[in-house]
Length: 233
Image (tube, rainbow, N blue to C red):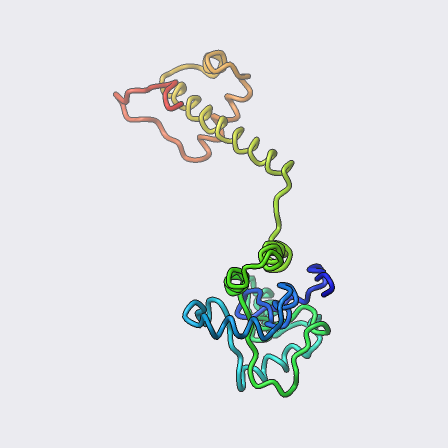
């Protein structure tokens, strides 16, 4: 069997999550569709509908096939409603039926017109099938599906950005502690110049942070309050 290119694998969305057909799952795992169906039938108690799979029949299947035969680049009803509400400053995300059941690349997903039912497997369902098949191919392909298919839209933060974020968090924490000490020194009667020397920062910094604290509504402490100026580290 030819190797599966997960980058070109058509992504199917149903009930606001990524799912995969029996046909595609079998191809990925190097198995036959009948194996996937038989494993499901033989282990039915281990598969919960709505958790591990969805079974589409009747009107829902007809609606699914009809919706996914349309061009997906066209605005959905949900897009139109959201745009309309946006004109009045209302920020709502409206997910309509078509959007919940869309297929990103319908040309690559073949659903026979006469099919009576369609099973769509969730990530948890795909994981369960890989365990039942218990082959090196199935285990390896599920790991790849997990990253390149089910969570392909999940954006990761680059290491450099994470370092910047951590540094900013550290600086914000230091600033918060310093502002606390600036205010305590002020309440203890120290001048801004004295506070500057005691904290080891410029007087301009002390003035700015003092002004910020006043703007935030900090008021004088009650008379007799014990001040631990350099506490709270």
